[in-house]
Length: 263
Image 1 (spheres, one colour):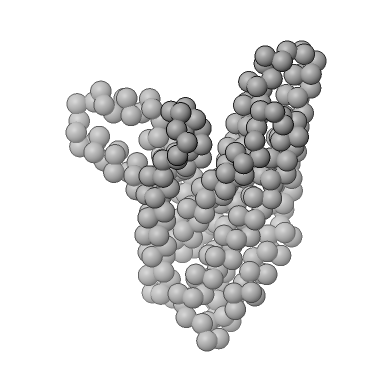
Image 2 (tube, rainbow, N blue to C red; image 1 turned 90 degrees about the vertical axis):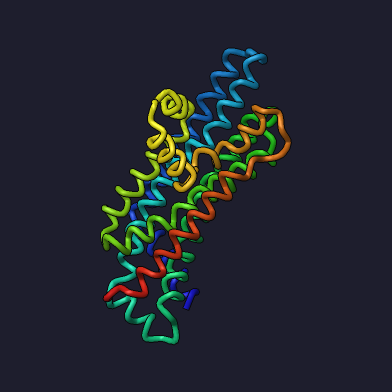
């Protein structure tokens, strides 16, 4: 059963127009790498080489954000399609429970889009390590790649749950984007400072609760950079832990919702 759903998700994605957007995004970011590299060579300023290398490394999170944006959009379209009576009815007529069907569907799409994100980031990372071999270690690149994939994975249960509720990929995507935007704003130091200036404990408490409940994608993506800033060799796993618990909770809601749905 799972193999069939995995192949369906894979070939459906590969044949979609989304692949063209993936290719365009990758070309833009790789092109930017060559521009930075050529500028470094032409200026012939060795003192600036490490700065440029760090700037190029920062392209991984920005590229990952673009790829995650496209992947979340892709998943938002997949879930409503998979729960259509014809397709869902076919699989549920087999010895497969609703929980199993939904879990396999979510897992299949998660694996397919995670593979695409990791592949495209890996291509970018390969160019990055070749153009800036003395400034960026392969281990750092690999760690950052997996952190970016984790950011996508924690959003999959949310987009799946919203897809079940709205039965519309567009609405599910827009709501997920709004959640991502709110989480992004709450993670800003400026926002934390602004809230501390307000003489409103209720609003501050609501913001604090929302900050820890919503997926903390910014904190996860910047785990390596934060560790370097504070001069620590160990990573702060709190953002990953709270985001994982949040994702598990939303997945449980999706399962409960699908069990009660009329297909």
